[in-house]
Length: 500
Image 1 (cartoon, helix red, strand yellow):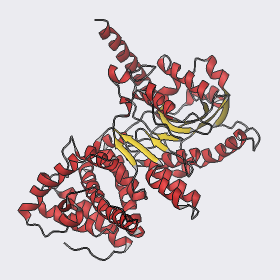
Image 2 (cartoon, rainbow, N blue to C red; image 1 turned 180 degrees about the vertical axis):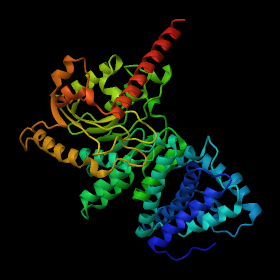
Image 3 (tube, helix red, strand yellow; image 1 turned 90 degrees about the horizontal axis):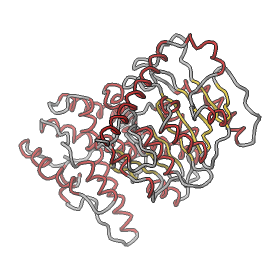
């Protein structure tokens, strides 16, 4: 199999979608999750081969030795994917030589990441060698030295992630709607030279968008040192599950970060009493609705079964203790109003950080895989919090809730951006105090303290209209209250169990 000349963007995009159709028809790849995963690991190995060519050339120019990531020569893409395989030999090679070798990699961060992604699970591989040969030929046409090809593949890949998020309910744990991500990144505004971290990276939407934002802001003005920093030392992500870790790593690569620090790891296993690495910026949508065992809870000063509260404590600890360190994150609405352990953590949040912004999102924002009502919180160092700006996003006229057929879009955040700009100017001493509107208002932190750290978005202009809340908003709130009750029962059960 020989490489072919670079194709036009349209032709290449059509070929990649054709590869998806081939995989989708294969007996091992019937669902969207399976064929996206299969395509992702092939794209990754094709990219790695091209990247190693560049690293080898750089080492030669510097007169230095180069140790390939894939030291076994026959296992590099150029030496196996382009061979004219007999049908009965290709699959035994992939299953018996290639995948076991990838699973065994260790000795450097990128090798450890590859090894962890390919280990401890069954890698999706075509049942038909003919289907695999056809897909290999398509992927081999991609020139990862060409910015046109990389752009085209990144667009198709982002569409695939979106399809995965909308068609596979389980994908909701690692796919965040891109309009939400873009809004958070714009408000947090990461800068060149800052380290950026997502402890629940999923498909790396926040990190990839952060890189795009930094590049857009920098324009052509990056120095060689800044470019090198962005490629190797700026972006950090952790993801517990192997498939999204692979998807996220590939997403970063396709957005232009050749060596992201994305690792497969259970973030909550880190004892936050002994944190050794901190970051300038954190942006994340951590999993919520799950529970953690007592061993994991022991890593946190405030023990709780709810994963969202453990992640909030983790994020607070991972921010560097200097002025300007900041975070934007998604939380379920229950995090705002729950008491007990939640109130304890929120007290620390208000005292040690400046929780300056809370954005209440409408029902269905994370449809179709979750109807739990959510909010965005933004906090900086240093504290304490003095005032909190609230924005309550409404639904477009005639829409009962966001859904798979009517998802949230970038323009739905336009008003929030405009109002927040005035708030941000006021915070920075460059503008007057914003006046309250029907959907935005300012709350003194002392008011929150007086109500036992209940951060609920209580719109003062809706006090007399509360009985007219939309049914979708009411049911979303009921779902969140049910989760709260379940969490309390689980904590009580754990206490009873400990006492036996």
